[in-house]
Image (cartoon, rainbow, N blue to C red; front, side, top):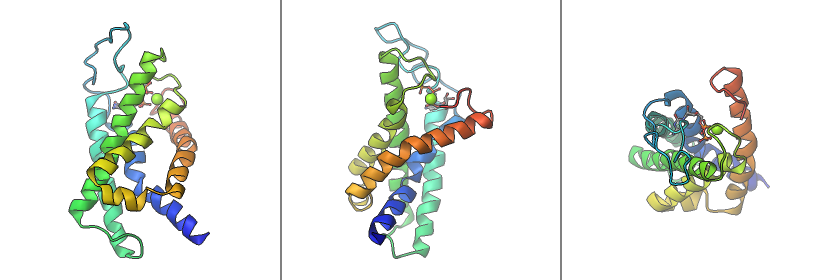
Length: 184
Ligand code: CTP
Ligand code: MG
């Protein structure tokens, strides 16, 4: 039981670069439409005005940097992983943050294709693609870290179950702080 709780908390902590990237993109976003304002052959926007390069790059880099700091803090607690020099901390953190916003972009692409407007509620499309693609990027770029930190039932279940309510809480907070126009 104790091991399960430790595993759950550890995977949530290590996944912070992916969670934080979405919030950081709201802060840095707004400049340079990723789809250059263009439509897809179905007549709808490819991605929409909610996906900008400043959000994608700024969000990934800010969250990546936050992750490096958080991962290096683990050096103070060597009980956890065989962790990391700064290069490996950056590799893992940036894989998660860039993967997260790549998944977020894919989610928007699918939302547009099924006719949901920019900012419209996408339910799981707002909440799962970023988790899955963040894990995929990590699995490709830094497989040993992925295997050690996330490739187990507890971690996967915790990330999938905790993400939707966490997403909701962050968005309601953003709405209350007047950072977002809608509370989802
Ligand atoms: N954002 C951005 N660039 C990104 C991701 C996010 O500029 N690559 C900013 C935008 O200002 C966006 C806000 O963060 O409106 C919230 O992100 P998100 O909820 O993902 O976008 P939505 O506006 O809801 O658009 P979509 O329906 O496409 O998800
Ligand atoms: Mg949204």
